[in-house]
Length: 163
Image 1 (cartoon, one colour):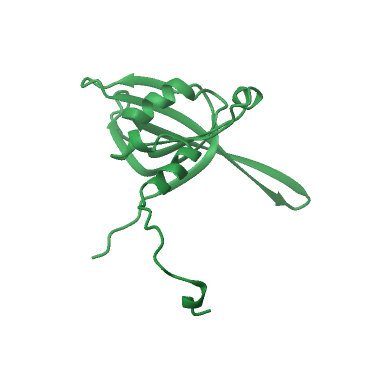
Image 2 (image 1 turned 90 degrees about the vertical axis):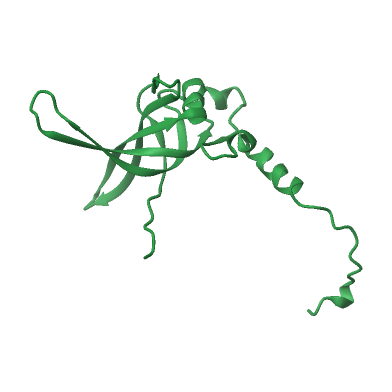
């Protein structure tokens, strides 16, 4: 039976400073609120609609959020939807909340960073290669070319190409 797909990609602005905490085991956890906006025309009027998303980041990504993300920051994230449930202490009812668990985070320069000339993006991932893949987008491109061997002259000439 085929597996399902649970993937979310969002580009937006942080609505308030992230909440950072640590689990009992010492793992960093960040809770963020991200706003995405869309504009559409309704009759003769343009309507702006903002959707708010609850995000959760762990480990290195949460540490980056703590150090670099604040209210107004623009970020691009990839993650997955996860529904959390709990019993409401006041009403006794079961409550649900859907959050987005961040797997990849790209910091997009803006605001004060852009004014200082440091508007470059930075990619952070919760994957096993998180330490290797972090940094500017230029370091990712350099890493790509460094992974491939130089085969040198293979003896192929223009006459060998069939077109």
